[in-house]
Length: 75
Image 1 (tube, rainbow, N blue to C red):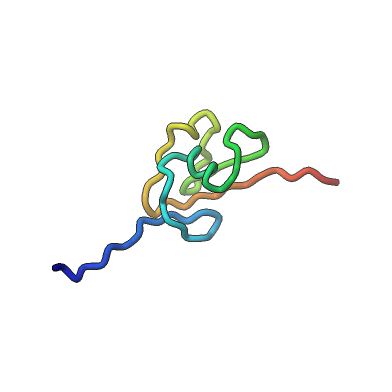
Image 2 (tube, helix red, strand yellow):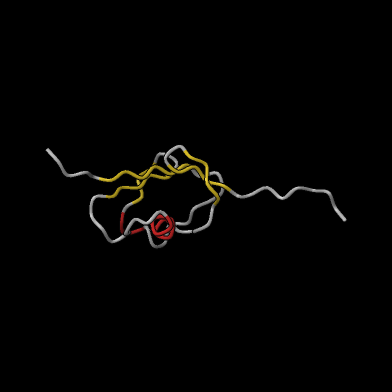
């Protein structure tokens, strides 16, 4: 039997390393309890903004760096 270790495939979301579960931006948002249809959320992958219309088809890759920001109401 091999003694090789299997390393988890990860991404970095807002600076935190996490396992790559969802393969699409929309799925990642759902994993994070964010509604991909909701207003006030923006996503960038590796420094490039991903338009909302592409969230359902944009595939995430291992080692991607994702930034998710949300608008906050207040005064």
